[in-house]
Image (cartoon, rainbow, N blue to C red):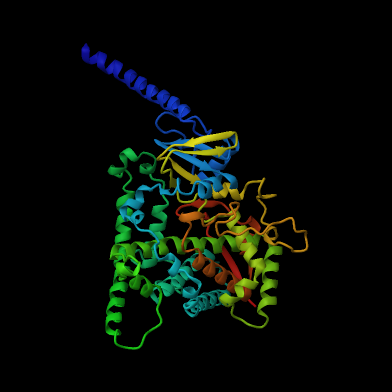
Length: 506
């Protein structure tokens, strides 16, 4: 009988305990003066509200609760900034208070959170980038030649795949002075190739992970994502380690010979061997591998996705396509090859890229920050408290689609970035280098993406070369059915259906 009573009352007791914890949590939240937000469900909070495209779901919630919003996602208190002013509060006014890293569980697998881009200023300095221009020009020549062969065969161009391979080789030639992929392959990467591992890694890191919302179970790695990511990084590191060992041997053999031009790997190795008494601190091999992994995992996918979105928008907007190509014809004249020094004169193309960053930011939710201390921050209806340890997220997609900041925000209008274009000077010069909080594709402040200077060169050079050398159209079935512009959010925001386009040499 006692056992029967136990089975009868145990579920009731469990429900009572959970309900009590839920009500206590609501009471605690009210006492903490959090920003407004949706009322959380027991245990899961507002987790079910995120959906497959959380940047869009959070933007809709912000329309109801305000540009500074608090949610409980699982057991994690999360504060979301969804306007330019709220982003300025987080990234500039309270930069130090929110400078902590809110570590996604998968990052623990390779300990990247312990390594900072300490030498990024030197690594991405203009003079350092200029020294590798000829290598990047060779990779874009290979891209153009490959597209020309497809055009002669009447075959469609897989824009995203070719942009990914080109971005990978642009990066690998800049860092290692060698290619990591073959642009002439059939598109089916071996799972053991650098490209294949990198593609799988980017897809895996972007998967939703229950450990990020319930840190209490993170040690169990319930989905096995941390183990998968660790295995992929071990394979990636092994390949890069071979390159590093080979370079160390070459440097030792050439120590007494004439000085050779340095690539980025040489710069990193020089830095790693720095003595503390010269004002620098060297780093170990694991740090070097982590820095390189960050560059490849972030730089290739982001650049490829941006090129694909730009080409898709131009194909949907023939007037903008014609303006971009006309500008190239005017700037280039009879010269067939675009140089990096030409990019500064391509104002309309720069505006096209900015407009694409606004509509399709590669990282719609910037890497999350963490509050180092409880901080008072202003909101739409007053001041609110962001508690210590809270996860802080900036929704740059919502900012880019804010009708108060951008008239007709869903329309592709590159002209909105052209100041003094003859249509009135009411527009202001908006840049994406972290000073203008209406456009933050690379973030701002001390956590800004360090690889931005190289990424911008790669994206603009690829786009300018493709638009200058070819006319573009959609394949006939796509022309009839329209272009699928649905999104897929992984490590970056990419097209759910890869873009196929037809090229005609000019």
